[in-house]
Amino acid sequence: MRWSRFILLQCLILVVIGGIIYMHKDRVIVSKKPPSSIAQWYKPENKRHVWLHTMFKLRREMQAVKFYSSIKDAEHLEKWANQLNEHYLEIAEMVPEWEKKLDKAAMTRLQEVVKNNHFQDVPNALDDLRESCDVCHTDYRAITAIMYRTGDFSAMETSPSVAVGSHMEELSEQVNQIKIASEDGMTDIALSSLDELRNGITVLGKTCSNCHEKEAVVYPGETINNTIASLQNNLKVGTLKDQGRDLGTLAVLACAKCHGTHRLAYDIRQAHWADPNWLTLLKH
Image (cartoon, rainbow, N blue to C red; front, side, top):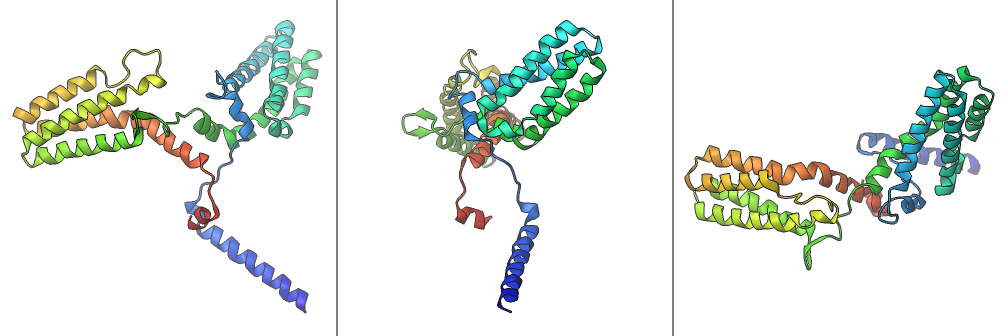
């Protein structure tokens, strides 16, 4: 009798947990983190994105194998199949945790049909091999790119003790202050806020060279500077419509355009780098 009650209690607990999960299914996104050992094949731990280039090699080699099998060129087919075998098995050396994900049997079958010049069997063998690639890509490709190919701005400063995030907040306040003062006819305040915004944008632009090393002036650039000049003039003599148009253009060029590339990816990166504790998990 006691065992039946115990089993019944366990079943009830499972039902409750399952019900809670089902109730929140539309609020949760499940993603798998790649093993931490993959970090050594990406910047900044490595000088190059070695893992990424290994993936490029595999894709190119698979294409070459398919091509040379279609024209029955045995010599080049064997060359590219050997390279594909080498770099495919290299995955286990680079990230040992993923060795079990490799379909070594599929690779062996591919090598056999290539060796025996069974050209007609190569496409099917490639498809079997590609399935193992697709399984990992489905689970890890997007999250790996977010975690290891997105810029980390958390420690970046525009000046000593001023983090990029804090500087960005000031720029946002200045944009809104221009809008508020413009609508309320406070031209002097709008112009002084624009001067502060111009200076802040210039200071921010100096941090861009940390990544964009080979480009002369990445930000603010001529288009942004021309828009600031137009807005300055319209704040003095233009209509509210002219002022609003210039300010909106400036916000897109100086803020939204870069945010679309960097901020969204960075925010997602930070969310996945953080290790949630039990309180965070329960809250969600």
